Image (cartoon, rainbow, N blue to C red; front, top):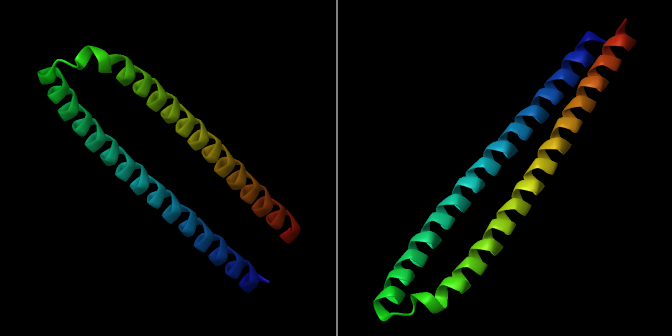
Length: 108
């Protein structure tokens, strides 16, 4: 019985490691996204500079504001999704803890 319990613990540990790895991958992905955003912003800044030189800045400022608003909304939506995902992960972890507790109770 103890051997089985050890095996179950090993399996659970493997699962936790997999989850941690997924989290690390998500973090890396977020960093890549941030870098893309920084690059996009740099490109936009170059474009704005060109536009200013051409005297088109006024015409484009409305478009830029609209684009910024869209981007901000997208970012907010991404953040909401991330929060939902975190909450799901927390719920899963709570469930795992409950299962572990039940298994301990059964052992007694």
